Length: 259
Image (cartoon, rainbow, N blue to C red; front, side, top):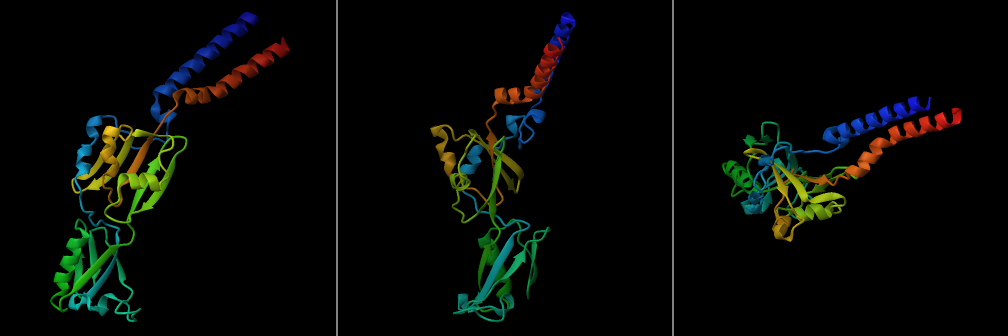
């Protein structure tokens, strides 16, 4: 009987070991919360691209607050404002949402393509359209729903939506606003950006002082900053074994009692 039990325990132990190896080798099952995995490092865009300042572009889904003034801003143009003024020549602006085709529908002048333009370019184009009916038009545009997404993975995963305040917002601003990097890898920060050339992913290493310049790269609206989690394989390995070890210990306890 003892030999049978011993033989059975050896088989159970071997099965536990086999299952553990399978779980460890299968990263998707072992760490299912990981995001933005890259198998080939060639998929990363050169991080040096981030060192070149760029102007944020308008995108579909942006909510635009638009004010048009006549006489270089002396008066507020009524078609784009509420009827009642709120002070010295000011009134509530209308909000226009950039549709899925990249257009907005303006009073008087009609539809206009704005996706892919900077705010400055859009202001100039709207001023040119209204120049036919308004004396020296002056246009002010602001985007009301600009934001950046900061996420971390692993056991302490978190997500934060950070308002995009101005064009000087940097990567370190985003990390600081999100509370810093707790258990993530400072040497593996992924920045995902939708560009005119398509979706790009950059790998940034802030663990080395030689790479500190990337702390101050400019982030853009709708950028995703993802800090790769720091895995602890041994702890995860022990956690995965715990149910099986409990089963084996229970079996040994029952065996000793019945014996």
